[in-house]
Image (cartoon, rainbow, N blue to C red):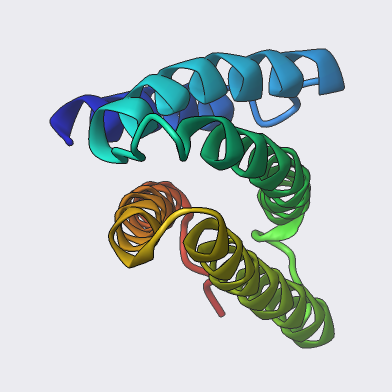
Length: 153
């Protein structure tokens, strides 16, 4: 788990060091994280031999949708980085509502794919999927919160 946390921290340090990151850099970070993440998932989630093909097909589908939400999260962070020092009350409210909506979509995505994994495998494999995805998501959220400055009056 420490390996995953270190990877996440490195990605977000690079991101915040260059808040003007272009689309190609974001895609490269996601691809790199995706490869390392897939290896971590393979270490933690243990479908049987008969479940592996179905699990990885579902996981790949999930990862595609999760990455799109990740791009949206990065876009919101870029918006915040560019505005937080002079953000109006209305802008802060609108931004926060977008963040909350995105968090709900992300949590819902994990829930939907938990059910898909369970249907294709069993409760243990689905729970392993849920646990590792929730762990990674929580670690990402913590790294983001560590790097985002608070709005001042």
